[in-house]
Length: 280
Image 1 (spheres, rainbow, N blue to C red):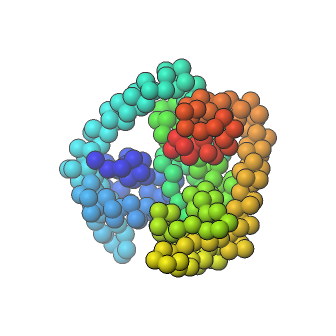
Image 2: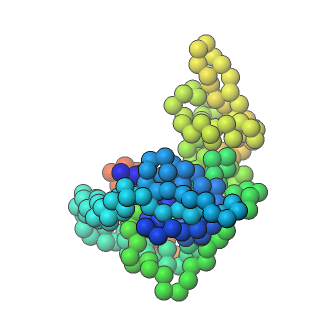
């Protein structure tokens, strides 16, 4: 079976009828390069096929194997959500869904159903200098009540990441998963993960790597330290902006719902982004 990323960010919008590849970024709320990479992966795995026609034009459709996946996916997702709901409690699940729906319905833009970056070389959501990502305005009558909890969480997390990235020179994903995990004295490079992200951070002067004995050590540069030191304030500023934009009550309600779900893993005073990423 494909990953949730592969399903949510490609296969869910495909069918037995061929669709022009140029239509997919808007349907999936992704950049063109993010869509292309997922098509390549799905073709390699036999879930879809791409066919060229005309000059540089490509259509995409599900294969027989992909159709089998699509026929099973809805029941698998419902079963997974039911098991997850049973583990955390029906009332907690209901509160989380209700609070997420309220926030997502108020978002001005549509976002992907699983968190995705602009591309391998750019970990931000919308891209720093590229033109491959186009905003998709949310229209009246959007089917928010029919979205899965994972899709609701994704749209909320992506919207928050965009808000954060308006204030930061480093994408939220790399700020949280790389920059904030490097202490002042540095740490071993092995085990830090996200090699493409680390390469980009080194290239742009946020990290430097040294060798100590047989270990490679990664350190924050002056630019990287500035990102790390300002991270908590930027997160707090983004959350305050959300309270103004969407209302204090909806955001406070969302925070309580997320805290109820994450109470076994996270401290009560965790930021809203820690709560969201802990569940996504």
